[in-house]
Amino acid sequence: MDFPFWWKQEEYGVHKDRKGELFYYMHHQLIARFDAERLSNDLPIVEPLYWDEKIVDGFYPQTTYRVGGEFPARPDNFEFHDLEHIKVKDMMDYTRRIREAISQQAVVTRTGEMVSLNNTQGIDILGCMVEPSHDSKHPEYYGALHNYGHIMLGQITDPKGKFNMPPGVMEHFETAT
Image (cartoon, rainbow, N blue to C red; front, top):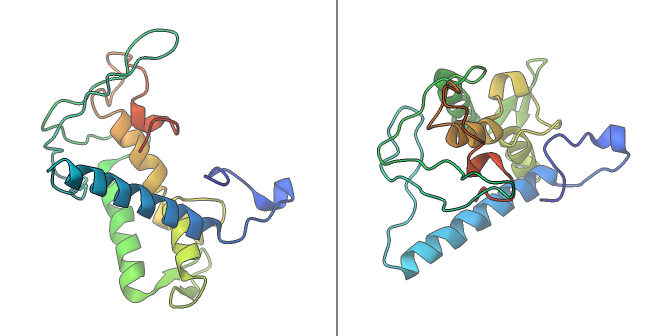
């Protein structure tokens, strides 16, 4: 990760060229490596994640916090539920809007202007939109799919906070792959 999602280039005086493109590239490489590892162990490649379907395979991280306590496990066949500030329907809407932008090869800005993705900056614009960073063309419309996705996955076993569980592995940059 070159710069975190909250990085404001104008505030810190450092412009990172192609930040969104690097975000996309890094995630593309992570998935390619993960799929290669799975195939080398006679496992199928990773299936896409859908907000309205169960996650068939559970996950037990077998990792503990330095100060004690385990990272929460996710049993088989868990499904997403609304969190206090993140709704499943919103995640589905963000996903649909991003897919529409890709299909139309253009994104809509806050002012309603259409910006083409069919140029050398297209992948950078898309990466900034999916992450999202402060460079997203319309964060209210396209949401925070990547960042909220980490939170939704991390809190899937205790979405209402009833059991006061610690954050899951997907909520930590250092353990989320």
